[in-house]
Amino acid sequence: MRFHQAAGLVLAVAVSASTAIALAQGAGAPPQLPGLTPAGGLPQGNANAADAQAVTAATHPLDPALELAQKGLGNLRATIRDYSCTVVKRERIDGQLNDHEYMFAKIRHEPFSVYLYFLAPEGVKGQEVIYVAGQNDGNMLAHAGSGVRAMVGTVSLKPQSMLAMQGNRYAITELGVENLARRLVEVAEHDRHFGECEVNFFPGAKVNGRVCTCVQVVHPVPRRNFRFHLARVFIDDEYLIPIRYEAYDWPPEAGGEPVLMEEYTYMNVKLNNGFTDADFDPRNTAYKFGVK
Picture 1 (tube, rainbow, N blue to C red):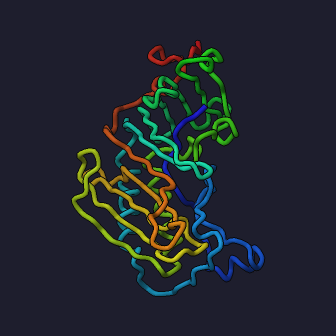
Picture 2: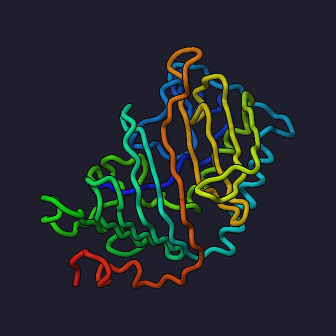
Picture 3: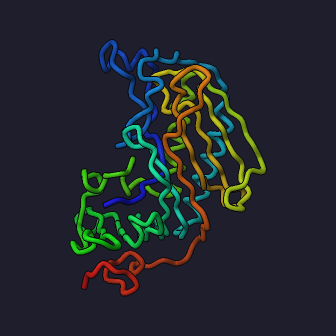
């Protein structure tokens, strides 16, 4: 049963310098990368590379981006209770770049709640997924939209189970702009411990008609410490939330094109709809979970 993750995207806890990692994990072991290990695999362009050297400079090229991300995350937590949107994702799983998937989503922050209705492609159209933190024994509820799978009815799955993760880099518990913003802060805090980082801001960018500031981060040299070669984050100028994220692996050959690993776009975002428990209840008669 397929569903969107988020986002993200990327990342988790800031790690120590490469020398400390080597002591903790053993010489020759790959360094701990920030964040979750995606089901679709980590970048391969830096798999055999050396570690980046730690730096102790007072300032770093990432500092303005980190400040913007922290400001946006604080504003999001203070002012946004819920939102609806269209989520568009594209992910590389085990070397294969999948087609775009389109989902209508309702997301509430407290308790973290997700309702998804799959819009496209045809193979997943009509599929619905509900997840509410602390409910349904910690499981997500899902049903297929049509075909033989729909005859099975609603199934209850652990978000990180093999079946739930099929065709997804991340679990549904990672979905949403708050998770994306949080992960972006964490990866920036990690990467600022190292050099070899180029950061550029591109104001006036647009995503589905929304005016954004695009922040582009490049690690030009493959290093095992880094999660990506190139990443772009599009911050909505009005909402101060990330509405698009894309990450690329290093080119397989010198002078080649970067390899897309994952991209997530949040379109048609409508904030603070006043969602209630009914919006995340499989018994809602507007849904087709068949639960009474």
